[in-house]
Image (tube, rainbow, N blue to C red):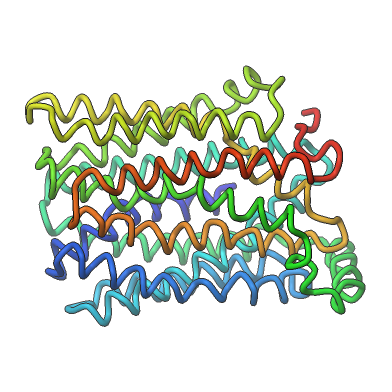
Length: 395
């Protein structure tokens, strides 16, 4: 938990500034920066497939650490960037490392959790990591206020350091139990001839697609909200950091409470409710364009509460549903393949942000359309998943 928190603190420093760094420090136009990051991020598309082939063989911890080290190399590349090429290379390395990390992190959490409720486990881990992310975002806000543009470079440097610290903590403090590793090796030998079985599982593929649509809102918020606030609405520099801190602070503090309050909802029903809230968030976000400049900061923070509510309702449930729907003998492979949902969302988010160059309201409508489209697809998935999969496990 400590290692994952350190990792997420660094991500809180970097992710909100990734696109802004390319425009404000490297000097790229918004559209060019968005395309460069999209092209670079597409390199991560092959990683979950590679991770799926090795995570059950070498163990989740080794793959998580490898992902952190690749992200370290990507951050260093960003620091060296002076044009579009190195921005794309840095985005590619960070994307590849991030996908390695997430393709194996859920398996690692499942191993450590054992027989405990996955809904609660994923919710608690998400809350702690979210709190660390929010602290990083607050630190960025303080750095921007005190140091100005220099803060962008400093934030990325600190982010690079956190990957080293997190990797060392995982290697030194979290040994993989030998019996579990042997069991994983045996399971890998059993399912190796059917490594492509995920492709022959339409409900699970549908879950990946709908999760992509639902994950796009958060990725858009992380990379697009600073652009929207700075370049379009011309808000004060502290607004994006404060909004992100609000999102992560409330999401962390109220996560387990929200899970208890919505415990009677099935996983899929909670996800539908969250999608409806996201549509409201998008409409409210686009409405900021017609408001006076003086009220925009407070209004944007208020809009962020809608995204907070959506995240609280679905917190932990998406990952728990993916874990529950995966066959036990191929869980590592399935969860690695499930990472494609977040990989594709990460690829699409910069492209959606680039649509600000077309019309300031257009990205908001794209995100809302994705949430609406995901609702009927989720209903279809619910009918085809195995019995009880959509229901939460007792805590």
